[in-house]
Length: 151
Image 1 (cartoon, rainbow, N blue to C red):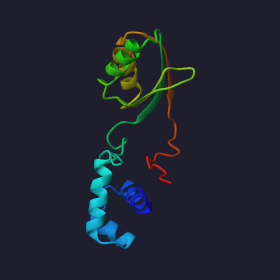
Image 2 (image 1 turned 120 degrees about the vertical axis):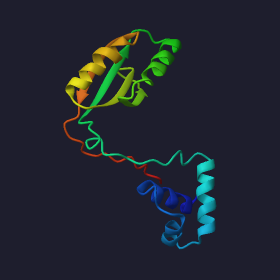
Image 3 (image 1 turned 90 degrees about the horizontal axis):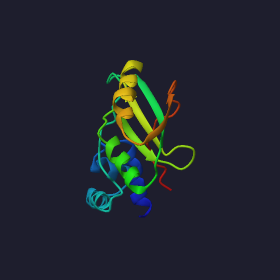
Image 4 (image 1 turned 180 degrees about the vertical axis):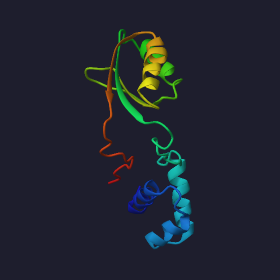
């Protein structure tokens, strides 16, 4: 990956709807090499997908929760089962297997506290092998930007 590829990736991260023509104009190149580079970046997996980022509050999801989950047993089969089971919950938008005091960090969006309580009591608590759950409620989003710093 060279400087031009990095510039293309930065432009696409800022605006996924930017056209090949606009990228070419900003980088002082023609459209054909830009098109070829974008296709190559897609094929090589640098660009995973294109999607719209929604305003969660306008979508009715007022509550954001980070939930630390500790499992009772840590053998590979139990970890894989948890990771498979957590996929079924649309409230869970991110899930990470982490090192430290907890096993997993999950990010959850809910309509309100009542909805989160329902999720916790009827969905998450129904999974086997959970030892402990600790919830942290987001009061203010200080920085919410999923832009990778491409060196």
